[in-house]
Length: 356
Image 1 (cartoon, rainbow, N blue to C red):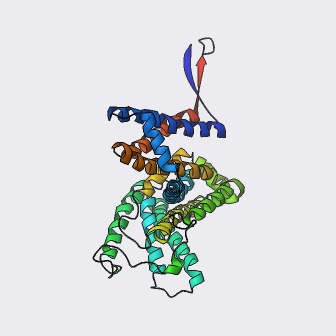
Image 2 (image 1 turned 60 degrees about the vertical axis):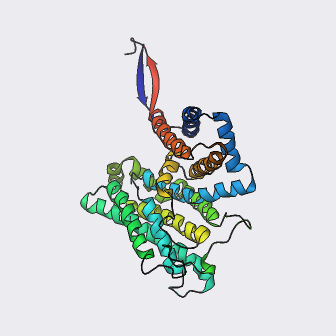
Image 3 (image 1 turned 45 degrees about the vertical axis):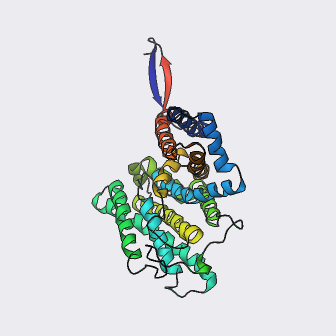
């Protein structure tokens, strides 16, 4: 008897969901080892994490508030990866969306109050989208590697933001703190529940996930994205405009990340600062991979990742274990998903010598 790998033509949805679920569970089991090494009970630590993330209305609000940008950056990565366009620049695109929101919504442009929120959303979407369209065009024209370009642009954008908030955009009333002028009241998102931080950005993220799901499943563009992701040469031979499709994907992907920045400025802080994001753009890649690039799955994965981070903060205060445990859970979850993707591509089968 010998072990044989047979390529799968298509991995069923149930198997993809099972791989994602097992990835999270195995990551938690592996993290139990350093928890025990720190002298704590893993079961008690995970109970405290769950209580910190979902144990009260305040905890749930904090988890969903943390999940809001992760939903949008996860969708940004998912739609790009479907077309084999490797967007590693969601962090920079998030900051560009936030910058556009501040430029439009802080009074530099005189807009009627009802148009303020639609205007900052449109500006943020276009700014983020432009940050991904440029690398996509460079890839098409010169064969440049979009992974390197989008990754390096993250650092360029953040340095550019720091320059602006220390210079022309600096708030003169901020007591010297490096932050931009604030958004006008009419350009800020309302809270979903009074006295809690959950805001309308969550609804925007959920609507974006639904629209993206419908686009992937029901539209010509969705079919084109799938075809281009499967085989560009075959798609081009079949008459699909590959270059135009990639540019559309780049605009949508960067735009979704830009909306995440708009939500953080308009829904949480009210102004732009260099610490606006603790890495939402990079965590969005983990969200997309855990979700198997599914738009609806990205919502579930974003809530899971957010719960890990919020719950780890609460657990750390109760047990003294470092909240960097959350980063370990996220990293191991991604590694487990990558290992699980092997079983999505291949089926293990025992083969007798006679069959060989």
